[in-house]
Amino acid sequence: DNEWTRARDGSPIRPYDMATDTMSEFMGVRADPLDEAVSGELRKLTGPVSVDGKAAKRQYGYGLDARLNDSFKAVNLLIDQGITVRRVRKPTEGLQLGDFIVPPGKEPIIADVAKKTGVDFRELKTGGSDGTQEAKRLRVGMYQRYRGGNMDEGWTRLLLEQFAFPYTTLLDAEIKKGGLNDKYDLVILPDDSTFAMTGDRADERRDERGGGARFREELYPPEYRSGFGKEGVDALKAFVQKGGKLVTFGRSTDFAIEKLELPIRNVLANRPAKEFFCPGSTLRAKFDRSNPLAYGMPAEGLVLFFNSPVFEIIPNEFNERYQTVVTYADTDILQSGWLIGPEALAKKPAMVSAKYGDGEVILIGFRAQHRAQTHGTFKLLFNCLIR
Image 1 (cartoon, helix red, strand yellow):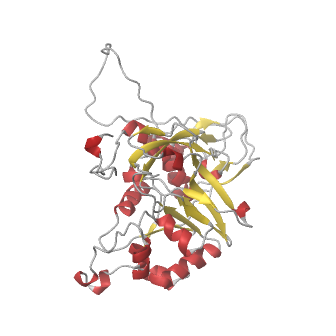
Image 2 (cartoon, rainbow, N blue to C red):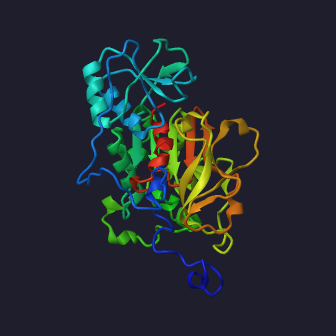
Image 3 (cartoon, helix red, strand yellow):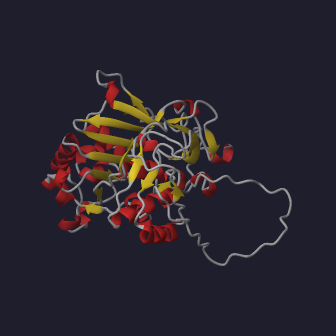
């Protein structure tokens, strides 16, 4: 950050893409610098390394570590085979909050899943089910629009497919029709502007970042003009009120806050770049591991921030319905990249869950599934999909 990166008025000039692309940080992997040449019996790798998980026959069944992303893939493959999996809600000997329990008796299937995923099926010491409940895989719908397409939706599809999560693509017509609870337990709105989703010109004017104005509707055939309008807003609102879950990423959290009238605000809205600027950086955060949405996460870790909203829960008479799942660190927030104005983030919520009617709205401000690369925060989405 110097005179070459600043405009004449002192505003930072945006980089072409992101301020950091540090894969070890995205993936939650420690990288150690080497101060001298490495010697020894080394073999050059010419392709992917295949690792078979261990799954010896066990009397009481098996445990799967919820800290591993691939444990969720293993659970999905087991559920596909009709095997009931349980989830730990109260830690016991050898099992942590969120770990999975697989019953004995299906050893050929379990051995095959262990081989496909590389996950070790650990031995259980007892066969009791106290402090556990059946892991429920939710019926997922994900919104997809036309109007130029949405990269974040494509990345999220790729991620779900990589980890064997079934989902259904939701288009405008189905949302506007309503009755979503009959088919879905959870709806995902990938990062997008409110206008791009609703197609409402009033939303375009309110959208501080625009994002939709460049798509001139007259250039598209009517059947490819996207936007679910007020009908879709009402349908999504009814879906949550009747017990559905709505997961929103990045800018789509603005949609949830405005259209569902949540007492939450984005503290960075309309803040000039000279005061706050963070164009794609890894930041330090704290995770509430007692919350089921953060099972398997470390107490402290990294998240990817890219023009992301940061939340404040406005005091109200129903504050007990709002839970902060992820919070930015108190100090020393920047891990790598570029951050101007860190005080705007300190101790602020980065991920919030809100009870709404009989359902739940989950606001994930940062790039938890960015380009299907940020392995370190995948579980924050996976925990939404398997409860």
